[in-house]
Image (cartoon, rainbow over all chains, first blue to last red; front, side, top):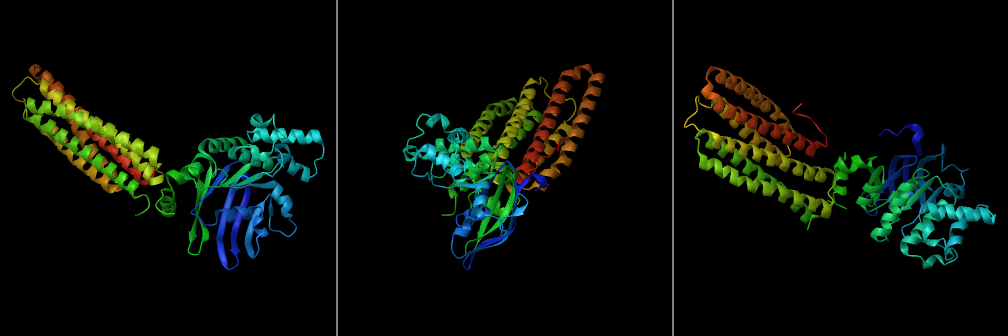
Length: 261
Length: 219
């Protein structure tokens, strides 16, 4: 596909993942380009979210799972024994399908991560909160009520708060698992606009079931399909425009055209 | 019910409508040529009147295509075929206009007979009609090879057009009274040459629809 070597931020090599006996991912190979949005699409149960959770080692929190293969980030295999998964998750953040703000006020939600990683200075924390909320396009809506409960925000605002919370710890990569699937079209558009605006500073990998969303926002798209017993394998990976106008594989064409799945 | 059956049916209907429009254009050219060779002004008038139907079909097919894009969001091959269909109907509408131009030229002839039989112009029209049938079949079958092969026939039409132009010029020099007739026949030859060019444009869109690659067959 021709991504220059020094533009690759993440390299997934021969990744296999098992839930007990079930192989959920089969030999995934993927190179993610720095400062881009990459969409992962595929039918339900194909392993999209599983793959996303491999990238920041979240799957290790699930019992009876096994990972084979390598994921290189910053020149190192993230599965090496001396890689600290907590530190890794600071650099590779995650935003989930359902907004999940902490039951705290807006300020504390964003300041939580920096505090946990050692920032104590109140002024510094204020700066981080303001910058993060501005990047998440939420500042103007909440600047006068930072001490309000986060749960008083609308669904779309809560999701932007979660994005701000992720940005506050200065990650390199943000993993997003259907971040707009529970939002109305206007809230979805705001999130998409926000994602486009932050790619100068971050690399985003987004799992989405919304084909139009993938085609609208991402520069690259990977299509994962499932064999019997829900084992996911990579069918096609390339520039989004090529994949949606001229896919190379019939399976891709059938899936994105809604002929199966 | 298969996935997106209604959508697939809409795509099929769109294709059928384009075929119907293509058949109307063929009829228009056939009638225009018959009106010309027989100097039948009533038939020529009917070509002009019936062109409204072709124009209306262009708009209807475009509206249908836009609605399909807006409501079904086709992608990949489907998207290419919808876009291709919209491009093709634009070409067909212009081809219909060329048939009208031939009919209007026919109405301008004041003579009862031509100075010489219309051998080369009739040959051009026959070639145009067979090219047109072939391009519609290639469109129906999504056959890029047949679409590409039409270039050779287009070259034949171009050569005949050049020959007609030369003959008409010579005829005008030899006999001044032939001037008006020769001018109209030169125009008609030009309309046929353009008709064939539109067919190769359609071929280019068929190739794009099938492969996603743009080609230039008129270059």
